[in-house]
Image (cartoon, rainbow, N blue to C red; front, side, top):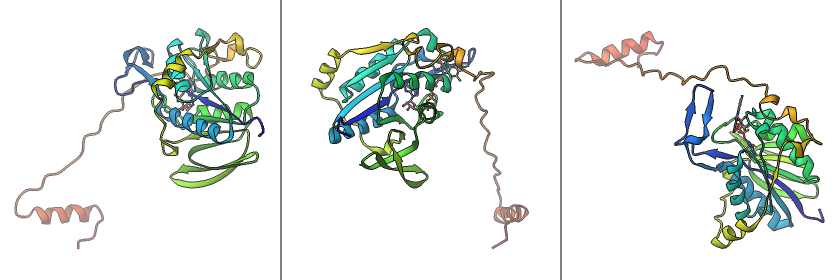
Length: 267
Ligand SMILES: Cc1cc2nc3c(=O)[nH]c(=O)nc-3n(C[C@H](O)[C@H](O)[C@H](O)COP(=O)(O)OP(=O)(O)OC[C@H]3O[C@@H](n4cnc5c(N)ncnc54)[C@H](O)[C@@H]3O)c2cc1C
C-alpha cells in the first residue's frame, strides 16, 4: 500500500436524542425540534481512520448525506483529522429509507474512486437500524465486518479485527472492506482550537443527485427509491407491574401456596 491508506468514513448528523420530538402525522422524526450533533458512533469510526492514517499514511475522506446543516458535522470531522469532506445534499435525497441512503453513499464512494477501507458507526442513535454499513458494502461488492471493537493489525491487503456480538470473533478480511465499529474501539480525541480554526478554512465539496448520475440512477435516491412506507407510528403501551401484597401472620404460608401453584417446590 505504497500510497497509504485510502479511508472513507461515513458520518451522519443526528438530532439530540434526549430532546427530539416525533411527528406522528407523517411518521418521522421532527428534526427541527432539537439541536443536531454528529452520531457518536461515527466519531469512533473517524478516530480509527485517523489512527490508521497516522500509522500507515494516506487520506481520510468523510462523507455525509443530509441537509445543508450536516456541513457542521463534516467541519467537525475535518477538525478531528479528516483530510477531505463531501456533503451529499439535494431535495432528491430526502425521504430516503436505509437502502436509498446506502445507494447515494455507495455511488459517492464509487465516484471517489479507489479506496481500501470504509468505516461506519455500528448504528445511529436516531434511526438505529444498523443497516446502512452492510448495505453499502453489498452495493460496492466488498466484504464487511460489523460491531468491530478492536483493530488488531493490517498485514498486506488484509485487516484483522475483533467483532463483538456478545461473543467475540476474530475476523480476517481482505481489503477493500467495510467495518462498522462499536464505542469500545477507541476514545475519540478532542480537537484543539488550532484544529477547529484550520478546519474552518477547508472546503467541503457539495454533490447533488446529478453529480452521482454516472454511478446510480437518480430516481433510485430519496423517497422515489425507497421501498419502505411508514404505515403507522405508535408508542408501545407500558404494562403495569402485576403484584400481590400478602398481609397477616399467614403471609408466608400464602406465598408458599402461590409458588406451589406456579410449579415451584416448597423448600
Ligand atoms: C420511509 C422513510 C422515510 C425517511 N425519510 C427521511 C428523511 O426525509 N430524512 C431523514 O433524515 N431520514 C429519513 N428517514 C430515515 C433514514 O432512512 C435513515 O436516517 C437513514 O437511512 C439511516 O438509517 P439509520 O439512521 O438507521 O442508520 P444506521 O444504519 O443505523 O447507520 C449506520 C452507520 O451508517 C452511516 N450512515 C447512516 N446514515 C448516513 C448518512 N445519512 N450519511 C452518512 N453516513 C450515514 C453512519 O456511519 C452510521 O453510523 C426515512 C426513513 C424511512 C423508512
